[in-house]
Length: 294
Image 1 (cartoon, rainbow, N blue to C red):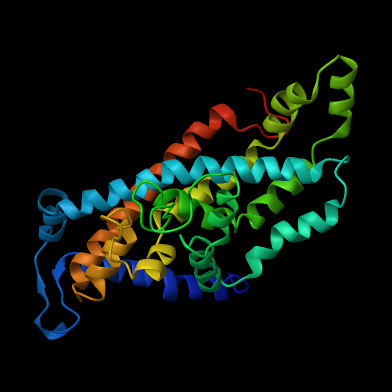
Image 2: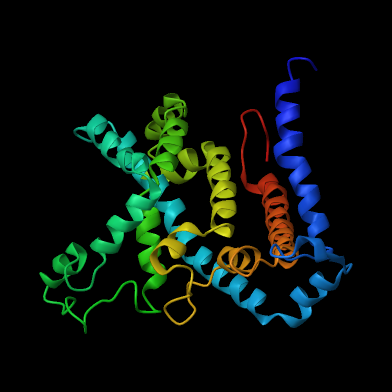
C-alpha cells in the first residue's frame, strides 16, 4: 500500500473526487457566473436532457453517424497497413514504418491547420491531384470537403487517418508475435496468403484488435478538437459537426451552465460505459487468447 499510495492519492484527488463533485453538480442548478445562487433541483437536469432537449439527441446522432463512418475505415486501414509493413517482400520497410508513424509526432492543432489547407477547394493539393484525372474538383463548384455536408465526415476521416501511426505500431507488434511455424504448416497444406490472413493472422491478433477497438470507440465518443478548431464548434456545415462534446462544452463553459453540462458529461459516461461493457461481453465470442478454446 505504501508503494501504491502515490497512484492512489493521485487517482483520488484528480479522478475520483472530481467525478463525485461533477455528479453532485448534475443535481444542482449551478451557473459558473453565480456560484452562490446554486440550488438543488434533484433530477430536473436529467429530465430536461432526456425529455425536453432535442439538441442532446441530435448531437448524439451526429457523433454516432461519424463514428460508424470513421471507425471501420480507421480500424481496417491501420490493420492492413500493419500487414503491409510486416511483409518480408516490402522494400524499405524500416523507412516506411518511420514515415507512417511520423505524423503522430506533429501536434494535433498544427495537423488540423495543415489539413485545412490540404482540403482547401481552390488551393488544396488534394483537389489539385483529383483534377489531374479530369474531374472538376477545383474551385467554388468543385469538391468542398469542409463545406459540403455530404463530404465533411470523409474529410474528418482523412484527418484521423493521418494520425493512425500508433494503431499501426500496435498492430505491427502483434503481427510479429504470431508464430511463423503456423504459416509454414498452412503453406504445406496449400493455404494461400488470403486464407492464412483470415485463418491465422486475424484470430491470433484479435486481442490487439479488441484493444484498438475499445480505445477508438472511447476516442470517437469524445470527438471534439477537430470540429472546434476548424469551425469554432458552430456546427458548420448545416449542423453536421455539432458533436456531443461540442454541445457539452458550450453548455458548461460559454453558457456557464455547469449543472446541465455535468449532466451531459455523465450521460456520455454512461453511454461509453455501456458500449465498453457490451464490447467486453462480445469479446468472449471473437477474441482469442493463447491456450483458450472457443
